[in-house]
Image 1 (cartoon, rainbow, N blue to C red):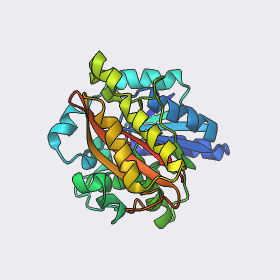
Image 2 (image 1 turned 90 degrees about the horizontal axis):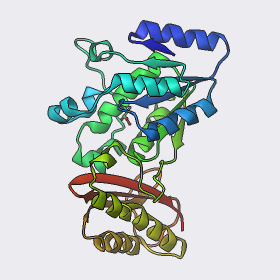
Image 3 (image 1 turned 90 degrees about the vertical axis):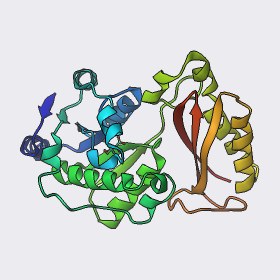
Length: 281
Ligand code: PAF
């Protein structure tokens, strides 16, 4: 596995792959990898001949410097996991390589980035689209894999790639779940055994909403089902539930007319968990 820390190194490595006619699949990460990331890596292996992973804790997508400083890092462990998975190259640049002195250019999806999660985390998605554009320009992959768990991020990336005519295929990878349905997340380890058991209520509420959507439930009824299911679990508190049109993330009401995304944020034992599901009428 090649480990590249400079733009020149990763460009040289990827140029070699392309000269050999290989299709390059990219997995973007901020490190501290878990099984969910490994699923993205395996999907990349299925989508391309060469798998490149980037590990970069992107400062511009954190609104709070404290969150950035506290973001967990374990590069040695990450590299061991990627090596075991047969990854071809890893790009691990310093922030100064990616954001040189005087960098002032930003990339933003002006609507999608500023609604829902973006409305409560101003600047977050702008930081994501800016860094993803930089890495796409540096690595020039044929295909890039993003998790569906970060649903709004995936839609933002789709829109950016479409609007800016980037010649890169974006693949959304389904959320990886524990056997009881809890979406995998590095946050799950912070749950006590009781809270861990209670956290199953997130996927249960989405499954209940999915079943109701199929029998003609309206948006208001879906909100009610999510609220009631989460409300029945004393350890869980529903913090947010957005039911929106899948691609545009636009607000909807009344009966569902097409692909609809349900995104929930739930606090369990002081840990904020998110989950999402696409449902159809
Ligand atoms: O999803 C993430 O881990 C990050 O937002 C990404 C796409 C790697 C950009 O920093």
